[in-house]
Image (cartoon, rainbow, N blue to C red; front, side):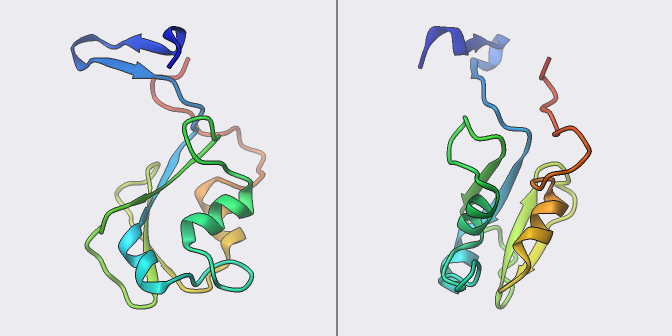
Amino acid sequence: MEADRVTPIGGLGRGVASRWNGAVLVCGKCSKKLDGGFGPKRRWSLAKALRKAFGLKKGRKAPFGVIETRCLGICPRNAVTLIDTAHPDMWRVVPVGADIAALGRDLGLGASDQPPRRAINDK
């Protein structure tokens, strides 16, 4: 880490800047149970399909974070649980073979007239 990217944030320690405008949490256990189910040949996990469809990379330098987590505890059949961090009060259950483009637009990943969402502490 470079010293200019690490900033002290009081008693909480230090912070590292990222380029994320938002994040999506995808249940890793649901994804593993399905063994794919998304993408052109239904061989990709939901996280991988979202990254590929919208040209997102992994890590803090991506414009939007797509993170696979541990089990979220919903465990639907033939679907994956997803949390949009912009709306944490409503979890989504995404069925196998769902339209990734439509899901991405709903999550704010697609091209739109609105400016991208920013973090609370962004200047």
